[in-house]
Amino acid sequence: MGTQNAPLRLTDYRDLAAGHVTRPVWDFVDGGSGDERTLAANTAAYDHRRLRPRILTDVDKIDTRTALFGTPLATPIGLAPVAYHRLLHPEGEVATVRGAGAAAALTVVGIFASRTLEDIARAAGGPLWLQLYWLRRRAVLEQLIDRAEAAGYEAFVVTLDAKRIGQRLRDMRNGFTLPEGVAAVNVDPAVMAEAHQAHEADSAIAAHAETSFDRALTWDDLAWLRARTSKPILLKGVLTAEDARLAAEHGVDGIVVSNHGGRQLDNAVPTIDALEECVQAVAGTMPVLIDGGIRRGTDVFTALALGASAVLIGRPFLWGLAAGGAEGVTDVLRLATSELEHTMTLMGTPTLADIDRTAVRP
Ligand code: FNR
Image (tube, rainbow, N blue to C red; front, top):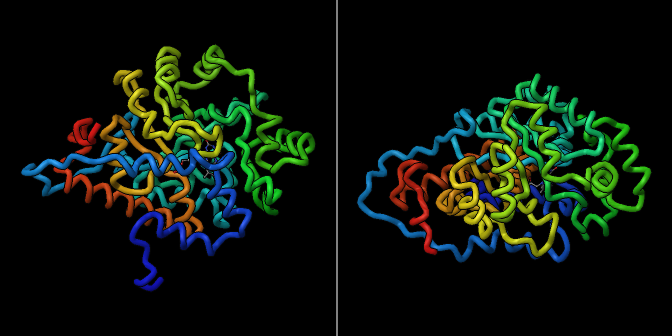
């Protein structure tokens, strides 16, 4: 890669990635639901946030280290759960976790990973969590939880904003299907086959959800999951104080403020605008993570200032994976973390603990 094209910011990786994948795969990754209003709003909501830098504090050394549930992390920036990394690189999730490990960052592996949980764990150099969709067949979930625990996954993230798959027009127009050799290898093939037969007309992804996700699920069902694992459980897809409070009341260990990167309910609130009410509702009892639209070190900083314990990035690491495999993922994480360090220096906050609400103009 010549210096002229060397990526200097996360979105530079977007341009690089575009040349490495087919149009339907690009649309699957890049797109959102409906008119893509929430997709656009997630990033736009950071544009008008303004920071309040402080002077004359000692910022000779900047420290981005943190910990979640006792696990030390070099950076508060982790990788969001994403299905089918093999769409973007032949090694798929194995390349992703190798890249994240080199940056000592957290990876949340998706239930629809295209490599086995065990292969991923063997390649990992950093902590792994597993994302689950709540499938109707609880026996499949039970097996996944057991396998994940045996392989060393440290927490479970249950995604709850996808009772139906968002209306993704680009995928519908493209008739998006998974290419040969890319599959959700950890989920019982019977579950997937059932889904495909029932919904041949939809995109492949929508078909999975329509048939296999439990739409009757309520707060009471969380007790079932709680009884099955002693690992931390996080709920992903929380956007309101009401649900954040209910999460705290139902014995979960953390929440992820997320609108699925604008891929589910269009017109859902941008995540950075939903963060503060969720943080206030849990009142320090559990970590609150956030994802959606984070493209800059200043965005990470803003989220931390408004009360996030850590942030997750989705599309940016997929761009790195497509453009450069494991190294691309490492580079995206390093770039984002070095932008955060740069911001912390100019803001006068040498450690994450120094960053608070006063850093962002109300
Ligand atoms: C996702 N996301 C997602 N979330 C989840 O819980 N399970 C999944 O299988 C997937 N799959 C998935 C595929 C692709 C291609 C994308 C882009 C996203 C959502 C993801 O975890 C996260 O919420 C968003 O990607 C965050 O927004 P940004 O960083 O992409 O703007």
